[in-house]
Each structure stands twice: as structure tokens, then as C-alpha cells.
Image (cartoon, rainbow, N blue to C red; front, side):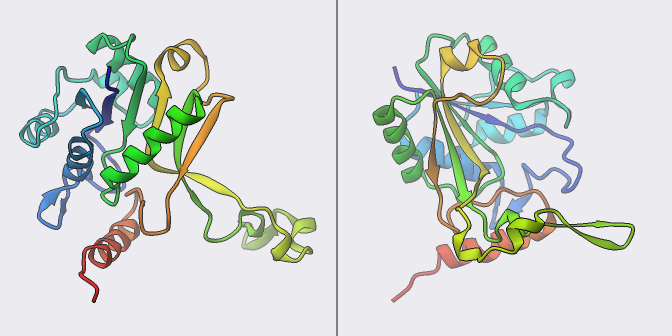
Length: 229
């Protein structure tokens, strides 16, 4: 059985109002995730879980399913993603599907080809989970904190080392994750000890959280979609 794609898209974003529907090069932002999922031909179903009638209407027009409206009590910024996903799986009765994808609604750089590569990787590795990641541009050990107008060096000993000797660090880039359904539902925590990754390059993924992100996304999207001789 093909996996199912779940796209969480609640209303009420605080930093950018209605960011799931913001116009991005002539399309609502969520369109890019829905289109990438459909184009990949990986999925038996592409489901949007939302509390918004407007997001539901737009998502259906774009070819996704919205079989229910998510309750408001699990649609605020304090709700953990696992609670949202488990609720969706229970509503659509898909516990017996081997794998589910969770594809975020505000990362318009995601390619359908990378979704396929990520799926191939989790199948080959037999891992219980896969997460889309990127490498930090600035190493976390260089982190500084400001307290009472003074700089606090968080990692003093590490800063004395040559930065060439630092290990590479990575972060969850807000693109997608894949999970073995039974393992995900059974365990208490989000992460599995059997987790692999799909590494995105700099211009393959950027999650929209701030206006600065939006400006950067527009630049990268233009760059990615400009023909080069």
C-alpha cells in the first residue's frame, strides 16, 4: 500500500498572518507542498489537516483531500505536531498503512524528486523515521547570548579551538518527515532511536517563519527557476 501524505496547515499564525495562504509567485503558499506531493506519485492520499474552512477550500481546489476540520483545541501554537498527526491518522483510519509522510505547508522549495529519494532511503535503511535536515550555516558552538546588555559566551572552551576541528551540526529544516506508522503511534516521544535523514542543500529547503524568511524564499525561488545557459 502506498504511503499517505499529511500536510498540517492551521490558521492563526502569529508572525505572518495567514502564512499558509500568502501569495507566493501567483499561488497560495500551501500549493507548493500539495503540488509536490501529487507530482511525486508516491501517495495513495494527500490529506490536509486544518481548522480553517478557507484553507480547506483552497486545498481541495488544488487536489488535496480535507476529510474533516481539525478541532480548535488542537490547532493552537501550543499543540505538539504528534498530537495533530495522531488525530489525523485516527480520523482517516490509516493505522495499518506502513508509512506516513508529514509535509509542511510553508516550504515552497521542496521538490517531488527529493520526496521520492527520501522514501527510497527509509525503505533501504529500514529505519523507523526519516527527517529532512540542513547543515548549520554558522556553527552552534559560536553562539552568544545577551544578558543585561552584556555578551555571554555560551561555549568558552570550544571557542578557543580552531573552528576547522568542529564537528558538523545539522537541524530539522521544517520540510518533511517520514515515519513507520506502528512505531510512531506506539512510542511516547516524537523521535525514534532508529532515525535517518535526508540532507537538503542550501537552496532546496527553507521553512517560512518570519518576513526575513519570506524575502529570502523569494530570492531563492527566483534563482532556482531562472534558466541558466
